[in-house]
Image (tube, rainbow, N blue to C red; front, side, top):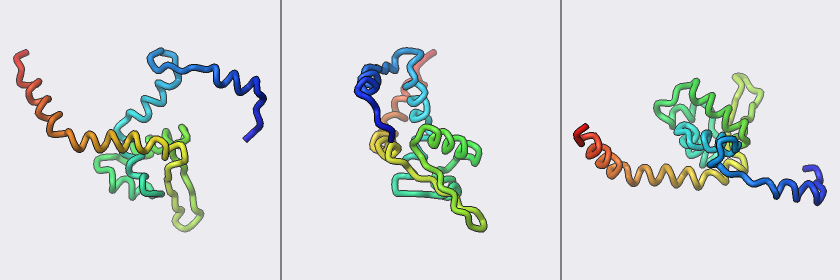
Length: 133
């Protein structure tokens, strides 16, 4: 990691992000981590490295294309690392980075909340849908 001057550090600290602003780059991050497939992938990688096929088996309904796109997006954002082992056939493993591990508790909490409250959500949906138009 290159050394930064005090002036560079102050300039970086002066930057304030606000996701409520349309031009704020944090919106792109929120879009990525708010995607259902990204949340499921991060949760599936909680216990360590997995291969593409293992992720597809774990995440029911994820097409190969969608899973590949999601993994590439997570890799681009520095949340997942892709390791290619030159064997026959080639082995590719995906794993959470240190940054991805900081996101895991948040997405795990969303997954756990969803599983714990799905019956209440379904009841609310049914009540809403039964109302007269």
